[in-house]
Amino acid sequence: MRLREVFKRNLELVMKFRGISYFDLYKLTNGDISVGYLSKIRNDDEINPTLNKIDTLAKALSVNSLDLLNPNLDLENLDLPDGYVRVSYVLSYPRSIAVRGWEQIALDQIRYKRQIKKKI
Picture 1 (cartoon, rainbow, N blue to C red):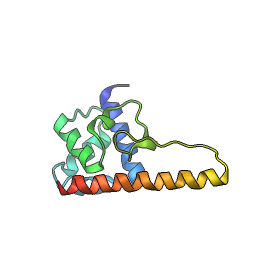
Picture 2 (picture 1 turned 90 degrees about the horizontal axis):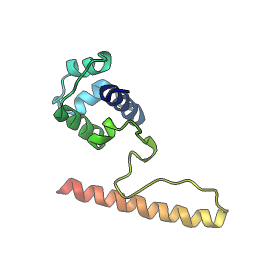
Picture 3 (picture 1 turned 30 degrees about the vertical axis):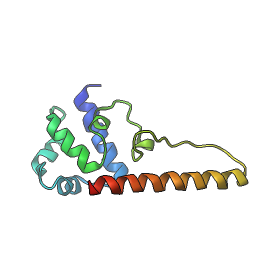
């Protein structure tokens, strides 16, 4: 698969994952990416976006630019910052309570770090 195909597929996967339309994406870029250009991305297989446009789209979608170019994009861990992974296990009820507590602590830490980042 060519890189432009990976980009287009990943862009649409992330948009679907986040519930974002192309018009929503236009608004999220604050008009930095025109509706016409987004239409070209959607309909043209030969689109060749610049790194600057990829970066703008990635920021609008709250993902890393490399995520949009990764042929093995992992949507399950897309919302997680570096150093975090989502796991799934079958546990007894008492242990599951403890793990849910750990999950809540980790989610609170992520939210706190994101709030600090926004203030900077």
